[in-house]
Image (tube, rainbow, N blue to C red; front, side, top):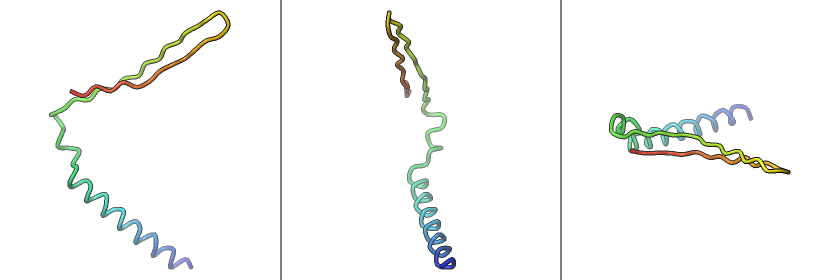
Length: 64
C-alpha cells in the first residue's frame, strides 16, 4: 500500500512539474519586466449613521 501510494505521488508530482514547466515556457512572466508597470491599492470607506454604521472597501488595479 505504501509503495503504491509513493509511486502515485511521484507520478502526480512529475506530471504537475512538467505541466508547470510547459506553462512557464509559453507564458514567461519575466518578459514584461521593464515594459509594463502595475500598481495596486486598497480603499476603505466608513459611514456612520445615527443608529448604525457601514464599512466598505475594495482593491484597485492600474496597468500602464
